[in-house]
Length: 174
Image 1: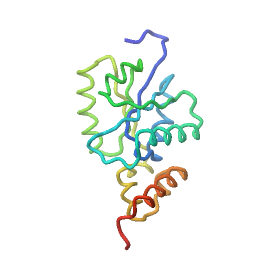
Image 2: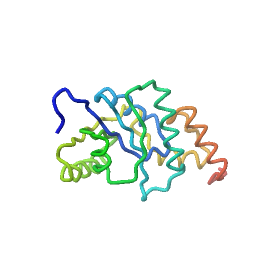
Image 3: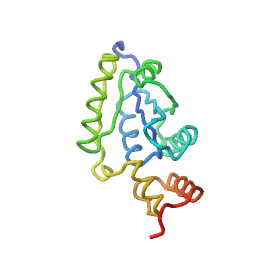
């Protein structure tokens, strides 16, 4: 348990494939709640990533730098979240919520995490109303079908995604 007055370290984990405006909103707001925010870029085997872990980490680092957030660092991990959080000295896990479906999943995860380490709290931040529909999975799908993703990601991430789609080929010609 953290001593009063000691550094508050939070972990915001995700695949960030790609990082969206929703993610950067949670990073910006989450960084205000802790002394140090660790953005944990992980690999989720159930997802089909568009970018490698190294590419995603570089993307997140670039976006965090553009936001001017000085108390945030980006760290890659491929481990149980609570083990990663313990290694980072975290006392808080920060998670973003968009909708009821997110809450049900995150509530279950928070409960399991509490069983693994009750001294690390989970804090949920509601997504900004204008950003609630944004999901990395949908951003990739829109881009793969040639749609405009400008309203969901920064210009530099849009360019990264569009370049990857161009390299891999679009899915439709309609």
